[in-house]
Image 1 (cartoon, rainbow, N blue to C red):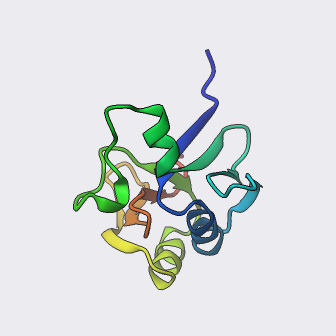
Image 2: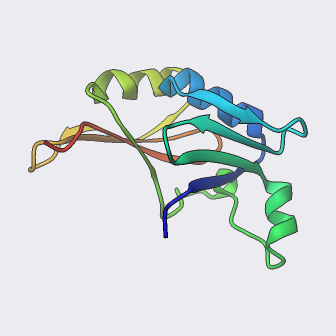
Length: 129
């Protein structure tokens, strides 16, 4: 078994890709011509976005859309950076909402949390040394 990808269902795939490019410096690897599926360049494991309409096709019982939930969903995307404070500020400057400001944890790692306009919860953190 191998972890292949993470798909986040969103209302506007191109907007989510653009936000992640602008806020976090990731680049789009692929966007389907229908604009209902796209992937970011994140290394071996893809971070992908799919339209809520695809979720509706795949899950007959429906799904909880992150953007319509008042609280963040119980999962996060972790992005590792040497400068959490700068990355956090950049994300806020382009539309993210602060969940938790940068804080040095007891084990020495700096961590912060932001919520993207599409509802995705993102942890920004320094590498664990």
